[in-house]
Image 1 (tube, rainbow over the protein chains, first blue to last red):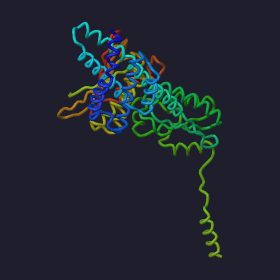
Image 2: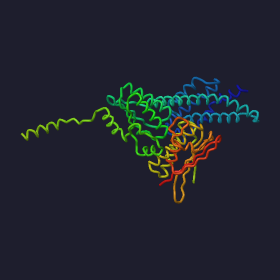
Image 3: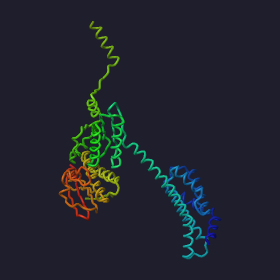
Image 4: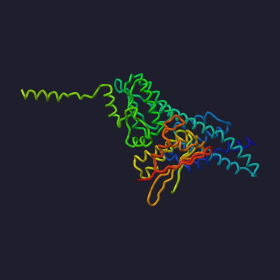
Length: 289
Length: 133
């Protein structure tokens, strides 16, 4: 029975393919693939249906299917194109088989449905696995990339180091901030560390608590911490929450914080004279003389 | 009160989702940047309490649009262990998790109205409202 049906389908593959292509092309007009060129869409459809038939023929996952799904994942075709395609194949095939059968009773119908499911399901599983695998891979890569960005430390001059924080701080990131901060202070031999929170959208008690702890730890290893980039609305919410940040200096902007860091390390900014100014002074003295 | 929308709190990153939605709603209602920050911070505290103490729960938003006043109602509810002594948790500096202990009293100061119902073993519901001035 199984092989009989299979032979029937394989032998009439041309008719099934024709129906399938018709249905898939009809769907296309209103859906996702509208940006893909006509030629590419048609050739992909043909290849897709061939791949389906080879897997049905060979009963299982084939190398062709692997190659095909891998290529579509790389090109970024939507998964819904493939699942829709397979479901259309299932429908078209069942329709075809039933139209060829002489007797259609419930028993026969159940057998046909069961068989077509057995052909189609492994293909769907394989494709979905391939896609979700590629997404998981992307997500894990992005997580690594985010982690690298999450707590950078910039030694701007001797003894002064800046840690700019951008984005939401969660527990994991708070831990990373603390570690990088302390490691960096020792490594760069920093006397003053500026923690810039201009880019942190919300400062709640958790974030404040982690910053206070980090600053306290920095104090313990003999350096000083200045919290900079406190926007007016953040200042108000900190006051409302009743958080005590008086243990270390805070500034509204990185610029002001940097200036006080220079003062703390006994330095200041001196504007050097330009060449023009030198010449003017020389001319002035000549005129006077 | 016209409509309600909710964010489920299950993971730490749901806290960010909840306060993002709250901030968007506050912006729509015409709150200023300072009040937006207050609302976002309050949501952050409430959502973190759910995450830390109850495990799971939800934050719901209701926009209040009466004849004479507009406002945003934030409702945090969970089926967690509940709070034994409410007056104790409303004290500044009381904490069981090693934090700053400013969460709930802070939320009360950040918002205009604050109601808390809690039954040990059953769960907690906190309703807070901020009015547009």
